[in-house]
Amino acid sequence: DVKVTQSSRYLVKRTGEKVFLECVQDMDHENMFWYRQDPGLGLRLIYFSYDVKMKEKGDIPEGYSVSREKKERFSLILESASTNQTSMYLCASSFRRGGSTIQYFGAGTRLSVL
Amino acid sequence: TQLLEQSPQFLSIQEGENLTVYCNSSSVFSSLQWYRQEPGEGPVLLVTVVTGGEVKKLKRLTFQFGDARKDSSLHITAAQPGDTGLYLCAGGYSGAGSYQLTFGKGTKLSVIP
Image (cartoon, rainbow over all chains, first blue to last red; front, side, top):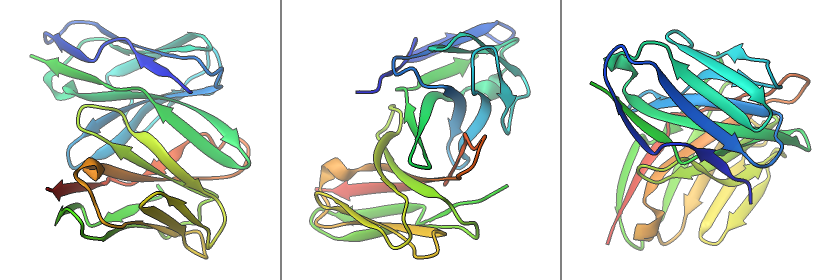
């Protein structure tokens, strides 16, 4: 089974703190993604990476950065957390099969910024 | 930006009833995935459809991809409380560099015992 593991299920941080969200996948997938999910807004793509050390901005990259030093690990960084970054954060990895892109998700990290 | 519209947004039904959830777009997709997400968890892949007109069955769930590959439906027969969750559809594209999926906002299903 594909396994995408997010380091924390719940996090509570203070405004202004630097926050690291870690994600590891065990299927040697090339592509990894970070989303945030908010009620009424659905899944919104923050950043993705299609190879080690490569990254691309998604739809809402402001206030976030990412790091991919190893193929299996993709980190999301909140440089200075703000209350509007309180959300559910989802990591995914993907591969292509027969022309389809299949994404697998971690269990999510619910981040509260106070 | 390609959009996927899901309907209905919310659905509350009694155990044993049937239901259909729709996913529509003006864009053509090379594939379409359906996910189910339970509260506090990440989405879990249910099925992928890739051929226009394709129908796939997963126990009491039937998935259909439209002939033009612009829309899809999920039909649940005799819904059970365990079917409760958020159902997401996601469209994918073919071609080099096509890494991303476009997600609908989801249908939140509640099945009341």
